[in-house]
Structures are given as C-alpha cells and as structure tokens.
Length: 241
Image (cartoon, rainbow, N blue to C red; front, top):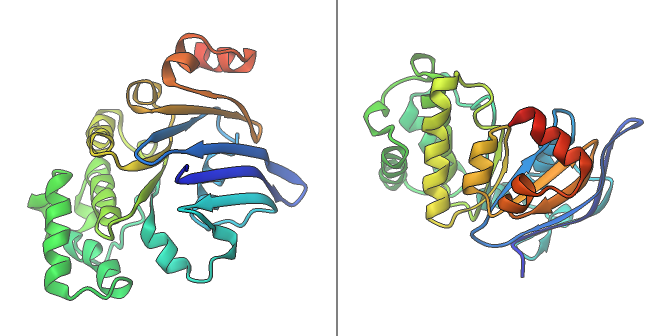
C-alpha cells in the first residue's frame, strides 16, 4: 500500500483554482520529485500534505489515515516533517537549541537525550562543529542543513522539501542536495518540490510534472526526461535543461 495517496485533490484560493483534480501515490522509501513551472501548484500541494493548507475536495491519505480528519496536527507533523525554502530557523536560538526544541515540547524527550539526538543528526548533515552557532552567522547552505537536521530529530516517516535550494547561492546548492541524496540512500520517503533537474533525474524514483494545477505527466525519471509524452513537458524540459 502506498505511504501517501493523493486522490482527486482540488484547492482554490478565491476564484483561483490552484490544484485541479490532482492524484498521485508515493511508495515507502521512494523519492518523488514535483517539477514544473512556477505557479503550477507544486508548493501548495506540499503545504496541503503538511496541513498548512486544507483542501476543498478529494482525499489525502498518509500512513493509512485521511489527514483531513486528523485531530492532533502536532502528532501528525512529527511523522511528516517539512523543510522550507527559507529555513524557518529560530534566530534567537543557537543551532543545537533549534534542534532540541520540538523534541522536548512535542515528543517530551528529556533534554539530555534530545541533545544527543540533535548532535547525531547535525553531525550527519555536516554541521556537528556548529552546535553553538546562531543562524545569523551561518551561510544559506549551512542554515538549510540545520533545518534538515532539525526535521530529522523528531524521527519522521516522511520528509517534505519545498524548493530546498532555491534561496541558496549556486555554490551552496550541491551541499544541500548531497544531504538529501544521502537520506535517499537510507530509504527515507521524501517528496521534493525542486527546480534542480539534474537532482530529479539522478535521485528521484518518480517524477511528477505539474502545470497550471494539473498533473500532466508522471513516471520514472528516465521516462520523463528522455521520452516525455506530453508536449507541455517537452517544452518545459527543453527550456530548463
């Protein structure tokens, strides 16, 4: 059974239909990349999966549960972590405290255990030497790696990435994508909204091409990139590759 099932999802902002009958599945351990032009609904789809937006129609089934009937959103978000474009770190806390906070508040871990887990995850993303640094002193790539470590600290079953490299200088993109690749090698289930076509081609198990709130095409990376069936997909890839 898929770990995430998106079924005929619709979402409007006023008269603007942002998601129009979207359906796709995510299998456990897979990396699914959502690609497409800006404004195609990719980030909105991710925000609906994380309950930052509510859908108007359809169903989103995550870990066997209809998420629009969930009462404890915090418990749900512990299982479904999200890494944002703009990092969303707490600037008044150092790196280690950013990674401890949710563990203590949401999971009720004691501070010592939370600290060990935080150091372990920060080391994993190459930020173990920066535990006492404050976000303002870090590069964009370092902040994003801390944000990934923070998401990992609550042991999520699924990670959502909303354009994790789009706020970064080009030379920092690789260091963040390498961390996500390492997580893929560990079979972390991930849904990644990305403009990095090389990453999608190399790392994704499935690529979903969206345009104007519709899924126009989905398939394995080699199918989408080497032999797209939809003319709009062909146009998009010709422009960005």
